[in-house]
Amino acid sequence: MLRSCMLSATLLTMSAGFALAHDTEALMQSPPGEPYVQVSDVLPLPEFLPGLGTLFVVPDTLPAGPFLAYDHDGKLSATVYMTPLEALSSGTAYNDLHVGSHEVTSVDVYYNAGHPGVDEPHAHVVLYHDADAKGRLAQ
Image: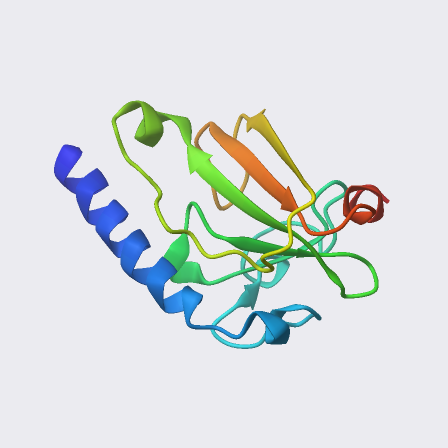
């Protein structure tokens, strides 16, 4: 188990480093392009999730992400991380994760019992990229 977590953390760190190379300007409008995929195209989830928006992720960065969250107009509104509680309590660290935009106006952290893609209990960490982002994603 520990070896599996260590391998996952190493792969996640390597993937996050790859994602850091992306031009953040290119991520500001949906779709963000390769290597990102729309979550609803690969998992049984709706295209727009109220509270989170339309999500895109690089599959190699799962489960933590980042998930890029776009509003109905395709504007990047938030970067979301989904960090499994068991991995965190076992000492896994998710360091140097990529952000969709360096502008962050507020942060929400909350519990989720699990859903397709991240089945185990986890924390959602949501970085909102402008003052109105949370409201746009709620609709």
